[in-house]
Length: 317
Image 1 (cartoon, helix red, strand yellow):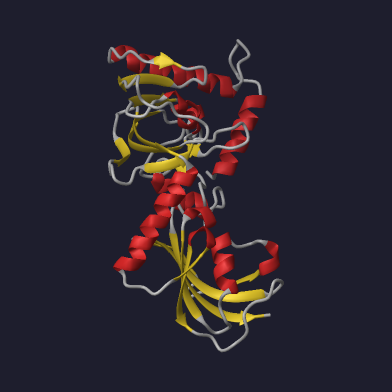
Image 2: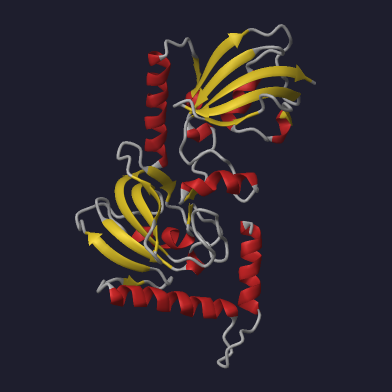
């Protein structure tokens, strides 16, 4: 079931009357069922966890009263282990302390920066250096959505979270630019630097004109992370075609293409600030590619990721 279908189903379940004598809706029944399952698990295992107003339960595994509190303008970096509460089998873990999973702590009623939503709602309770275990009911996780090999529909989850980093978007930008500079130096590249951290590396000089402000351009591209992992490519397929006056491209790519000549090839390296920014973080991360392919989230690139574009500018109109 697609995520859009899931949200529609949840809305229908919320509106339609339930079949219980008490007149509960199916959505209310699911809330009660999930809550009962979590409470039973906690009681059976003699666990002290506090229920939050959202419906998530929190067990404090490690406190740090002197640690910095998560604020709305922070970028949080976490390590985590995600388990299915029924059976406690591991779904996914991220333990790389040098590269924590990052996301913007910018939840609002209109926008989630992190899935599952229950974790987004409650991550702000943490301080730097603390470790919490979040018991997340299905209706605050993935509800009726299921993924073969990961979890069934209406699954409840336990997520152990270590908050190992708190920073700001500007600090992230400065760090990314520094990493890009080191990358260019280590790979002995001759690059021209431009505002906001764009680095332009000509590979083959084109013989045509450069694009104008209102040009339509046709180009092949390969987008990848600095470690070489390919995110997306048009190689072997149809080239991309866009009008430069429609703001269809991220800032770094738009700027880089305007520097090229028709028939030319170039490599563009850019920090997330002029690429895909904070985007949306998804846990488990294995869902990201499928959700992006279905158009449920954009972009495919992870939050706060510097990217490399290899561009061949085929035509300008």
